[in-house]
Image 1 (tube, rainbow, N blue to C red):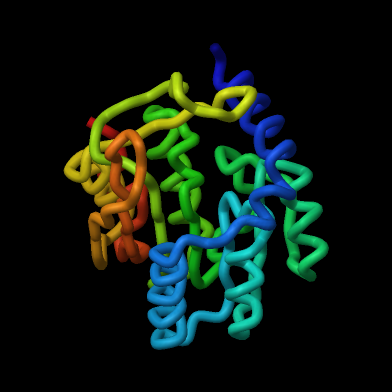
Image 2 (image 1 turned 60 degrees about the vertical axis):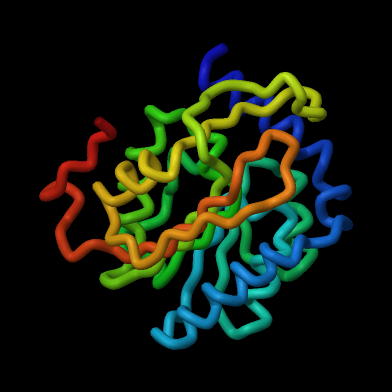
Length: 218
């Protein structure tokens, strides 16, 4: 299956799930992760935030109500429709092609979205995020992981099935550290049938330009 087919399947799945996801409860550990990142943003007086893979905009709405200028992007038009209903600035956009100008945002937040990229795509997307962040910009990246895996899951109840890419703790830190400074990495145990855990990374735009660093995934 090609990357375009994976994207088409993701778009279809999340369009179908948009209203259900908007109505579902948010797990407490996700609320805590969000609040922790907000505290850091407030401490460093960050004003503008991009959420990548915003879903129906519940996190974006939270940050906006806390006084941040929020922009949301998602692959799913239905998710973006729900963002607009919440009064959010939101665009249908593929995260492999972020069309914002360099140095546009103080911070980026993405929760369980970058795991839909292939392993080959992730370094280039990280470089794009690095470019659109202002100097000393902050980046929260949250994904599931714990093992190295790439593909669709047999037990995924979604139709069409979604593409996932997982990394071991060591591997994801290696990939990310080639583009960003890692301020913190935490492994959060969560209830999952596959025993994978959540990988919480708080990152900062490196003082070195990406072109000066070795950003390849080796």
